[in-house]
Image (cartoon, rainbow, N blue to C red):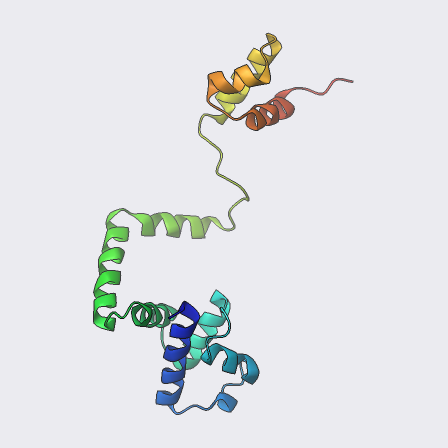
Length: 160
């Protein structure tokens, strides 16, 4: 069973248990709702959150039920597995890292800057000034040639 099909079963069962018809659920287009319940679409996280709100459950519960159904696992076993993972996340302080990142706001695009980037850029510039090729600089600093070229572009002063 595909993930979309498993979610379809869960959503349909919850909707029926709540006594809703597709017509009652006006926050999501009826034809789209039908496609969700038939497992014909992969929904976005935003739609998942809206579905969960309509069904009065946590989005994580929808995912847990769908993945448990997909793997033929009882919901209680899936819940135990998730509880262990959450404990591990807490133990490794990943939750604190996530909170710090969220408080910091929107993350800059791309990879984080390496802590030794300034030193490597300076060394690349020095070696380039000494006539060392980009390939040799990259090899000696453990960087890609593209990174060395970028360092040289951003650290070499423009000439008039």
